[in-house]
Length: 123
Length: 237
Image (cartoon, rainbow over all chains, first blue to last red; front, side):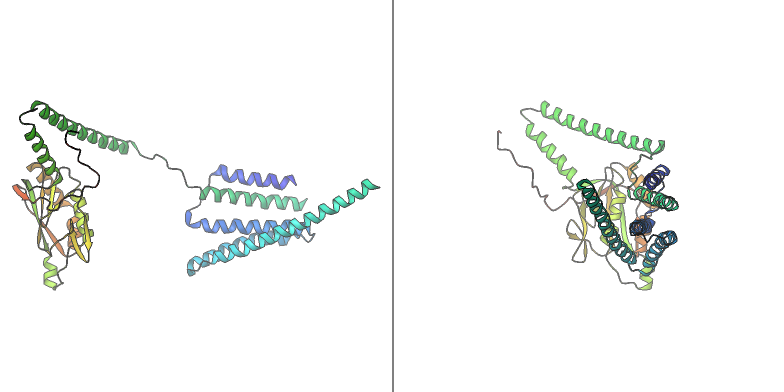
């Protein structure tokens, strides 16, 4: 549990300390990549909770989604269609769905845990 | 365990990306990047302003002195002098002095090609006025219309106007008065080398800048100024 959070903190501090700024015109790509990454991450957590997690699916999904999203945005820029909006929409919807599933799984686990503890105490 | 490391790695990447995105979105704060030379220029500008203000204060002091000296008999005359000065400053009376006369004429090429004669566009005229206004202490007249600080060069129903009065088709004259002949010469040299001539040429006009003359007369502003804010005090108030 703590190791991934440590990783997150490390990543954030690395980003801030390195003080990297990408040009404004590529900001769109990065924002959509961040969204894709978050989506994959939440998907991974959900899969983990539902016990269907697979390493390869997770890793390939992560990079593939990022590349696909950025590629879609790139294509959109060149076609004059705001395709990145489609990606934002798709990832946004999936993000919330994943969050909802995670919440439900956690809720079920919690209520089971409470049931078990109450039966234990009543015994 | 492997799964944990995987998540750690992915979260590291996500954190890094979020931080970079945050850095990018946050506008870089304004930094003072002026070098010594730029600061020196700024200082020179402020000094100039200072000197101008001092000159103005001296002028006003002189006026006060005049009022004090002429209390009683010629107070009326002193007031009339001040009013005259103010009118002159506001460009409401005719003025004569050293200056240059510029003829705006259609270019020879446009005549040869038979390009239809058109008006000088307000943009071009504004550019010209701005260019000339780099020089302090000048009085200008465009096609008989006095240009003051309140003048507007703009398009009214397709006509280029100064002070709301239409500027005629070229050829017409622009007269610029300076404080002395030396300033006129400076202005003449400046205009000769200025890119404004090219701008006019692009619009099929040629600016024929005349040699500085010691006597040029320009008209005063005909229209009255609108005064919305100043109120006359009651007599003896």
